[in-house]
Length: 488
Ligand code: NAD
Image (tube, rainbow, N blue to C red; front, side, top):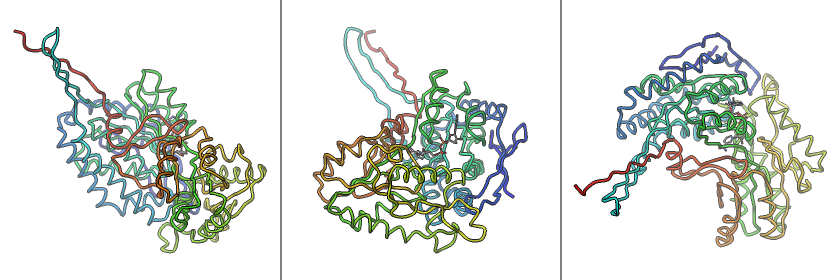
């Protein structure tokens, strides 16, 4: 049976108290392994190691050496891709093809991308002559220090490395607290760091839960200089309160209730295929996924029928089953929450076009967290199901009559993470994109990422931006040095 220990100061450690919790497979309810739960003293040790490493050989590496190290980490992840793939699939149950193409590929890709971005991320200088003589102002970017990385379970390796890679690129040290549901791939990264010669203490992992456990101990630790968090909005609020003590910086990538808009002039094949992906990739457990879809009335019936039909191509099965392209939800507890929303949708007046229930599976898969792709129509505007994030394979489709109505409906949310717009009228696409309140707008596409671009949401979807130079900005402090010269 697998055992996940903490990774502190370059070594795997069981933790002082020796407490563990079960890691349960969402596929069949079986026990994958035991996870060590960090107590306060383990977190203290991890943070102290990360602080000490800030002044060690890590600080002596110049930009070129750090970039080279990041590339080595990417190569090393790729050389152990099978191990990461197996671990990610065991924790999440997702189809291996999806995990291979997205999670593992981006795990390596994040390190390579931020290695490549280090050079263009330069400093600034301003020369000035005046009453004080000649002045030269030089801006310098310095590491923030110890970064706490708190990540969720839906894209574990991808999202953790999206934070760790820029943090290390900028010369910080990190303490990662992966989700209690998915400890495997973050923990495996410890071996990668050692193999690549990353100095002990630069990269640390503590496992455990959020409240009154490793997560809370870490974000409230005075030795942490900044916190980068991806997860639910309510958790983000709690972490921000902890970060207020000592005025620590936060980057918040939180929840969404993302709309999609399909105009009658859209390329329907492309829009159906793209919407199937945006609603149901990763079994609907993607922060960027579409949960509210607005379709122009002339094509509404046809679009709903085609989308429902397209869900029949989703075939549940184990991760490495070559015929399967549909995984379970992350846990039975999460499925309970999603099924509660299905019951609420009925109460609120929804018509179920497909799904709305758990999937009947046979043999040991009957003990997993399987759920059917779900499409509703008919909910009244303002229904709770249309306002609250479900984070499951559920989407409501509503007709609209004109652009202004579509925009008003799409923007009627407390969140503002991602939107999709499907139309062949590019002038309209630009106008609508401009008017949408969201950090990310995809036109005739969904979740295609250039890692140089900003990533993040408006409103309750988050605070700040990561990705590209925005990420590098977050992971550095800007210092201005003013030289007076001449006049002697
Ligand atoms: P979550 O908020 O329950 O947990 C996220 C992480 O925070 C976990 O590691 C958890 O242990 C930790 N945590 C919980 N309470 C804590 C506390 N008090 N102090 C410190 N850490 C604490 O989220 P989840 O269920 O793991 O993930 C799903 C959520 O993540 C959804 O809301 C989804 O939209 C969001 N998400 C957002 C993005 C984005 O980029 N905006 C990406 C992926 C997921």
